Each structure stands twice: as structure tokens, then as C-alpha cells.
View 1 (cartoon, chains in turn purple, brown):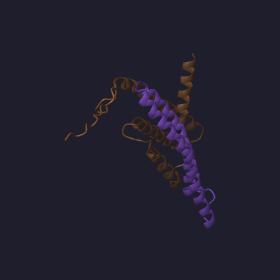
View 2 (cartoon, chains in turn red, cyan):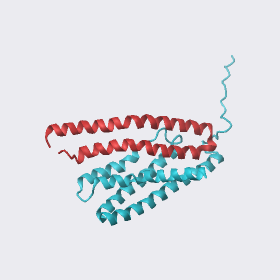
View 3 (cartoon, chains in turn purple, brown):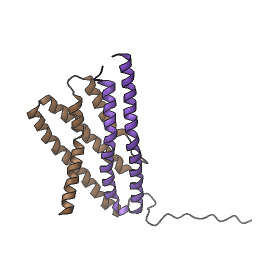
View 4 (spheres, one colour):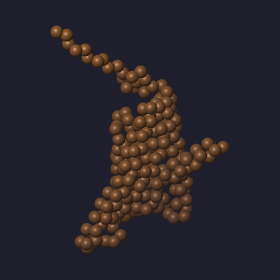
Length: 81
Length: 144
């Protein structure tokens, strides 16, 4: 692998995981905070709120996972090497 | 000389002193555990169906790669569910420890020739298909 390709791959991997984590991070924080607040207000609806939170977190975190997989492929199985 | 009177703090009425859950909350959590069981069952059923299809139309090696990814997805979903269950009790935020399994499997797939990244990753995403199936089932049952 040429040094330029290696350096570009490392920078691209860092950008991929870094940028992919920003949006879901903010979203997960907002969702979790609102869910905990909702549980504190209505403890009788705890199961429903936690269930909805689980589904939304699973969808949100998959956006981070896409970036993570791209970064890992660039670092360990680079197609341009 | 009189000492100033300190205000005595009393706990709120609906909060137990030991921090235990109320009976209503315990009943409500049964719904959450039911959701976990449904998602797990749907993921396993979809994994079985897709494993057979991939074995027939591609090869056993690709199908086994898919199963590795699907098992990683099941572990990820279980860990995420446990994190969500502990949120607000033992934990203040949802952790990222559930991603460790996926990272290890992808790195291993890039180092070992017999493992392929794409079927493993698509197998990992089986849990999302299970969630979509669950949501459609919930929507259809609520509309009827």
C-alpha cells in the first residue's frame, strides 16, 4: 500500500466514525433523557417507554454502525490497497 | 443559646426508601420483557429462514458466515436491551459496550480468509428486520 493511500484511508476512517457518531449521539442523548423523564413522571408506563426507547436506540445506533463498518473495512480490508 | 432548626427532609410519597420499584412499575416491565422475547424470537426465525435460503442459493460457507453475523446481532440486541433496562437505575447513560462484539467479528473477518465481511454484516442487520416485522405486526394489530 502506498503511503498516500494509507494516510488517506486512516483519515477517511477517522472521519467516517467521527461524523457518523455525532448525529446518533445527540439523538440517543435526547431520547434517553426524555425517556427517563417520562418514567419519572409516569412509573406505571415504564415498560412501554423502555420498549419504545429500545426500538429507537436500535435504529439510531445502526447509523453509527454503518460508519464503524466503513472505518473498519478501510483500516483492515482496504479495497484500494 | 438556641441552635437554628434544620429542615427535615422527607422522601416523596411515591418513592420507596430503598429505591425499589413500585408494583405498577413491575407490572409494566412485563411488557418490556415480552417485547424482548418477541424480538429475539423473530430474529431467530428470520435467521433460520435466511440461513436456509443462502445455503440453497449460494453456499454453506456463506450461510455459516451469515449465521455468525446473526448471532453477533442477537448478542448486540440482548446487551442493548440490558443497557436500556438499567438506564436510570444503575446507569446514567446508554453505553457502547454492545459494539465490541461487532468490532471483534469484523476485524476477525478481515484477517481470516474463510470469513467474509458482507455476509457477516448483513447477518448482523437481521435484528433490524425483526424490529421492522414487529412494528408492522403492532401496526396491523392496532389498526384492526
